[in-house]
Length: 398
Image (cartoon, rainbow, N blue to C red; front, side, top):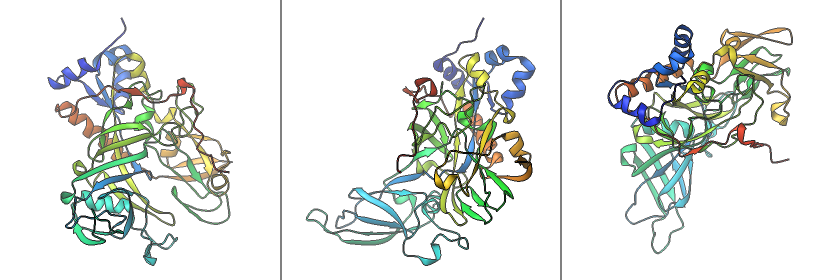
C-alpha cells in the first residue's frame, strides 16, 4: 500500500511533538537501511540548507518621518547608495551596491569592498549606521537634507527581499587564459590552475525537490536566521535545463525570490562579502523543509553528491562573451574531493559556499520543527517547472 500524507496531518504531528524529521543527509542512510516505502511511512519532513553568496539580494527599509517631513530622493547608508524612488521615506538597498565617492572602495584586484551586503550585516548586528538623504522639497515634504545615525531598532519596517536566491545548480568556474581573472566565482588562476564551485549539492533545497512538487509560492522557510517565505520564482528561473535520468538539472535551472523580516535575522546567516576584484555581495542562509507526502517525494530527497553534475565553464573566454560552451560535467562528489580532471589535467577545487553552514541550517530547521516552533505551509501556487515547458532565456541584449 502506497504512502500518502497531507500537510494538515504532518502539522498536527508537529504540534504534538510526534513528527519524524531528518536532514537531507540523514535520509540517505535511513532509506538504505529501511527501504523507500518504510522510510516514506516513517519520515514526515526532510530539511535542507544552503549558505553562500547570493548577489541578487537586498532590503526594503522604512525610516519613519523626520520633522519637518521629507520626501527622500537620494539615500545613502554608510555611504552606500539606496534607491529612494519608491515613496517619501522608503528605500531599497541592494547587496552589490558600492559607494560612488570613496576611491578606496572602487573595484580593483588590490581592494576589498564595503557594500550593500555589509550594510545589511551591520543592521542585523544592531550596529549604528549613518543615514544621509537629500530631496528637492515640496509643500508637503519641505525638508531637503538629513544626516543622522540609525540602528535596525529605529526602522519602522525592514523587509529582506531577494529577487534571486538558492540556484538549483550552478557553474564550476575555471580560467583557460594566460592571466589571472577576478570574478564573482572568486579568483580564477590562469591555465586551469584552480576551479571554484558554489552549491551545497545533496543538501541544496531545490536538488531535493527537482520538479518543485512541494516548494512553491508561500512556502515557509529558514531565511537569514529567521522565518521567511518564497514570494515568487526568482529572476532567471529557467527550469527547462537538461537533466540527468534522475531529474537533476545540469545547469542553473530554478531560482527563488525570498522575503522575510530583517529584524528576526542574524549576522551568522546574513554576511556581507567582499569578493576580490569583483565587488560586494551577501552570503545568505536558506533552509527549506520538504514534507514527505508520498514515496515519490521521498525518492527525490535521496539524491547524493554522486548524482549531481555541474557544468565546467571557462570564465576567461566563454562566460564574458555569453557563449554556452563548457568543458564538460563533473559531479559534486568529485568537486568535494578537492580535485577534478579537465582535458587530462588535474585541477584543484574550492567551494564558494559553505557545506558545514548548510548542514547547520538543515539541523537548525529540524530542531525548530521538532520543538513545534515551525509549521509547514502548502504552496498557494506552483513554481514554473520543466513539466510546464517554460524556458526563460536570460540573454536578451545583443
